[in-house]
Length: 259
Image (tube, rainbow, N blue to C red):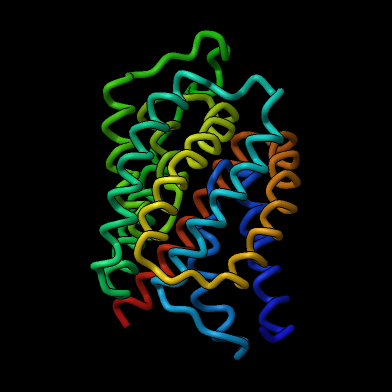
């Protein structure tokens, strides 16, 4: 592997995992487009959508481990929420990951674009009072949480994501979970989800081993740093960063699909 490609991959992995830890997402929504476009733009390499989806599935697993470790003593990890949504999204992501091997690169990109658009709409919805409730009084609709996480799991498994970029808006807007609890718990749920995605994809897809290793190393460094940074940032600012990030990604993906 060329040094220039290795440096590029490390940069992509670090940036993606840093933002992942800070916002409670797995990093796929950032790394998926970065891996597709940056190596090609710099002339150092090229990855297909299938290759990228496998790399990001593995990257999400390791970046979320770092984030969960950083939040383990914070009191923001809601174990009931993690259990209900984690098991459901694990089943869905395995189905999506296995099924994605029968889809073309174009279809995978379209699924990713649709997910990003849905997430943008949800992030723009009002979230009045979600951060006013004391953590010990937080409750949620179990049935709704299970159904929505299963659907997210299938879609996220297709694109190699953990699904957190959809889980976060769902938890904030539909389930009314406070922002910091959402960020911490979604990292744990996404960690579980990524296991299903990886299992589904590894069973049939070729893995770019060296590229994946570089991304993983960068993720283990960047994710804890991002999580510790996120603890110090105002929750409204975190929500705004997430919305802008998802919107920019959705615009880029759909421009490429349509043009």
